[in-house]
Image (cartoon, rainbow, N blue to C red; front, side, top):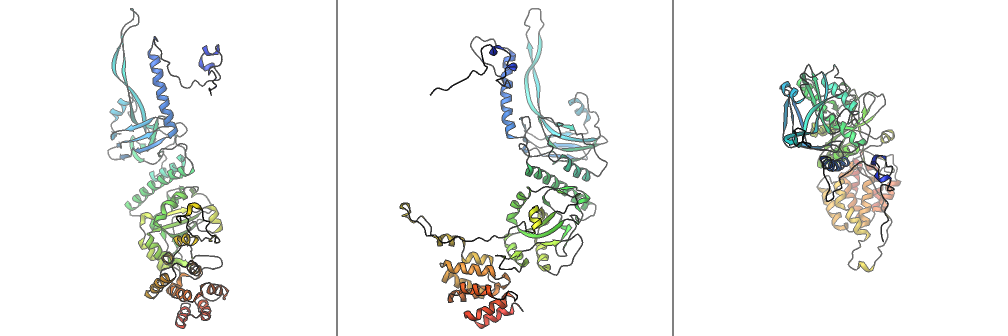
Length: 560
């Protein structure tokens, strides 16, 4: 089948007109059409150079703009030496910038700076400057230009054009305030958030590497995170929050270094330095005291809690938290904050269990780890003091962080950290055989069940407390590990009986399993008076199910 084509320029008359006047074609890119016998001029060859350059820049614009790798910037405030490491970047104009070696320049070398800028900038004005790396092409080598007519004289032109990169300073429209540098940088975090190009101030063929403050013709400080960002297209909400978090972490480290250098501690209010915080970030350990129920970092109108968290979950929690809005410390609206203390999986399983509270078996399937509420002023706690003392001794100072909880979770008092989630097993459906199942490729319902739930997995969550419990666990596993109904019944009982009774739970489960009474025992236990303790309820029900008297007395003693 032949393809149906249309002439791109319309009729033959309009084809001879200038391309700019034709309505049905976009003359954005043009290239030379070569043919034998054609007289080529410099204009024809330059047109093709421009065409290829534009095509390459189109690819760069699709990829985005920002830092690809490297290009770490540093300043020696004493010598005024500004150093840029090698690396790569993409500009918003689509140009690829690559610096193949370390580049250093002294901001006090005014002779060199003036020479590179045609005699200008022998003195820097007070203000803020964006340090940029930009694309530049420089004409090199000399070629003779022969005259076209006999009466013309010979001339000279550049023979080569060398493309390179150049580091420079771009004055910013923001004035350098008469404040401490830490406060100035904190205000710029808020002002520059989401304004990558600063309303056209930064050149399109450049990328920003940081912000430099100059006062009295000398560099004062350098912030290597302001205006800088990794390669991306238009920044979405999460990427802007990631920018804010990087800027906050850098500034907080400088704040803590300055305070400790002056003999001050890390116990301070965030409003002393910041007006805007990212939705997730580091918090000084000295500003938090879970043993006495106190925090001094966030304002009094904030609802601040603390909880332990598994170290393996930290990366995911931080990533999800970036979807929350930033924290405005000047707002009077209450914000719900949770401070998280990362622990290893082993330590979390050991210490977090001590913070579990009693629960209503009709409403909760698993024990709940309630968040510990912190106040601006110390409040002596009678609960969990020893557990939090131990946890706080094991947490690393640099790993403690806060997270803004989702608004809906804050309003309904639902924890933002899901420790476990129950599920209901579907009704039993016998497998349907097929001709392709001659090799037992389909798993039975019990095979699927045992891949997910077993006595060993239950013991990981509710481990025996002594040798007697371990022996009971081994016996029940040997006798009933292949009985899905027994395993499921034990799971249901573990969901109802609190973990504080784990010293007797496995002995009891073994007796009930051997008597075939697990399901009936669960029904009777749920019908027992819920006003009494669980130990009294188990002892009361256990008499009719033949549990040993010594075991029942031990259950009663746990409620004493």
